[in-house]
Image 1 (tube, rainbow, N blue to C red):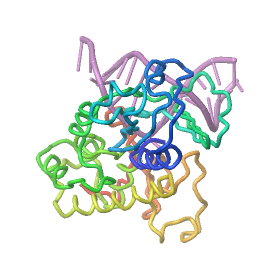
Image 2 (tube, rainbow, N blue to C red):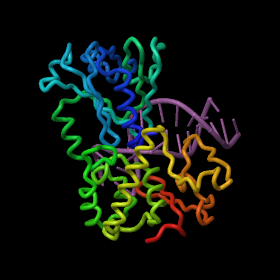
Image 3 (cartoon, chains in turn orange, blue, brown):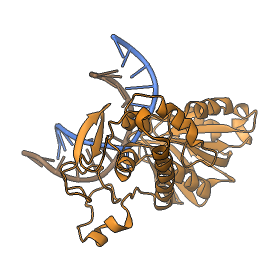
Length: 280
DNA sequence: TCCTTATGTACAA
DNA sequence: TGTACCTAAGGAC
């Protein structure tokens, strides 16, 4: 599930369920057990997201104090490809042995499984992560011009640049494929051949799409005139959920022109595009 | 029950 | 460029 919209949604959900409460923190799987013991019983103060990175802030109360000179100990979470988070109401059921991190209070619990990163970090360490990430369309302070400066100087394909978290944070394989389709841009076009106007449009569109993604907790990218109802076509049958133009639609007809959707391997990820609608 | 796949990243060579 | 890592679901048998 994890592109940026998922992580921002998780930040909201962790906040709603746990902020300003003392939290029982455990690591049934064991890999985070020492840190969990330090945090156990402290107050979750805030949750923050930048791109695909999630940060849970714990206050200066209790055992975490030694990590909290500036008031915060942070749990840095990155879901990677397989990580999953599951919320539920109290009382929490017995955890399975894959739960890396469980938070629980009187009303809720949440389990984290399979993350690529789950680590206790300091405020300066958190700052260093922000510093190496590009602008995130879902953060109010994001500067799209910073991303364009890198793109406009690069011969790398726009498909690769959109996945580079140093260039733009939070875009993953689905949003990449879909935003390029929506603007008729061939994924192999070099970054430097993108016009400023095209970049501006892509950024605005990503902001809107990803905000909707946070709201609905899924990725939908088809315009109203291309929904299954509007076109009289069957809805998508896929574990993935949302309606899309090209992602995982290899060899199926393009919703706009009917051409079979193309697919290719690019840097060990699947790329999807319409060879007719998207231009170099 | 086994095999493949996945919305990701980091590190080695 | 290749490989390692982490988990669960779906499909093939």
